[in-house]
Length: 627
Image (cartoon, rainbow, N blue to C red):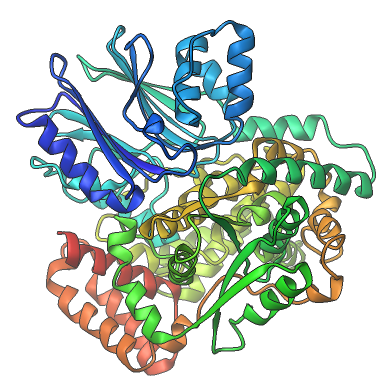
């Protein structure tokens, strides 16, 4: 796990500029740093290293191929690098190896197989830049699901890229300014979905793609080497035909293979254990394949409604892990909140970022690598919102089944146009024109009547939810899962985990995002995932082989905090009030203050808390600290 950076067409002091980018990413790689320049073509590459496999200088970057044609900077882990090395040797790469790092293996693979074939062979999480000095081309690539970040774009005529958007902001001639047109998307979701970023002319490379950049003209071309939609479609066309027990057998074996690969490390390793199905399953499999007790980590809260630490403790005791827990309150939350802008680099408002940062900080005190159970909801149907969308659409059709579609749509359209800030009319407009499960999911819990008024820029940029075609997969709920796997998972969940871990130089790994686990998940019939109100059925089948059912059968809580309670009084209340007051002038050009005031008044005078209030606070904190 590392941080990478680069400038193509730098001006002035290229070494100094790339070094500033490196220093801004120190937390991503505190063990070492490297800079390399091609002065003739004005290409600068930078790297910060968090040493995980092969801790020697043999794994240092930027790394050159034996013939000096290729230079690589790389962030992540390729779990099948040993198999790739054996394959290279079998296929004819007979050169001597300098060390045991995965970096050297993939560099040699790029030279031997080419870019696309190598990317298809790689199994892991990564973001990388490969400079082909002979062809005058830099290739940027990102892993299949987007576990590792990669920003790119232009700054004053130079093409730049980095793992951390804040590193790009360190450039002397950075004057890109805020991309105000992304704010409607931000206020809709609480994050900025790829390919957009908060800055003009800076973008996120989308998962499963690689970008070729001509170092002379800066012309770019994007290529897709792996497509989740295609994987899901192929899974639907070739479904798993065995029994649910056989499906559980297969899933367990795939998870064991994935976990074994992801437990390869030359530094201490552990796992997050929240008490939920996903993390409990990952830890169970880790313990099953490990010869020693696995280190597990959890945080708890005083509020019983949000606390799962006792459940995690019971699971750890049953599995006999070496368990560590930490209870946190408002004081620790305040400390984390003040670091959010530094941690995430651009506005990001999933409030579970706070416990994720806190558990990452605590975990890093003991280990350098932590496995996580994220992605189970998107792959195995864990979110309650899927059932809610299905129920709401069913209720709508039942309630208005006698009303002609044309009339219903006409009334809904009029309601939507007249709604303004009126929540009832807004909801009526959305519901009366709703026809598909995908539309219900897009609407559910994500938009209020006032949302459109928060940003003064009313541009409607496209996103993965808006682009998703209704009925792409035959099963309606499968479509909702795919929608979330395409946008919410990479742009919210994976951002949260990567940035929170890296803030404290902690590498996080996700076995459920193993390439083969993903492929298998999309072949499973829906009733192996969800039926009769039970979610993640096949995951539970595997888990109950390791953990008693009674330890897990309870309502889903999710990884959240009592934010609306903490903001009511004390230090957090003062922080929020001061931020809103201080931000009135600085943020008034892009945010509608009247709408902001209405959210704060609803909360302080009526006790009505909206997640949009947190979105506002996170944007204003980012603006106050960076603009």
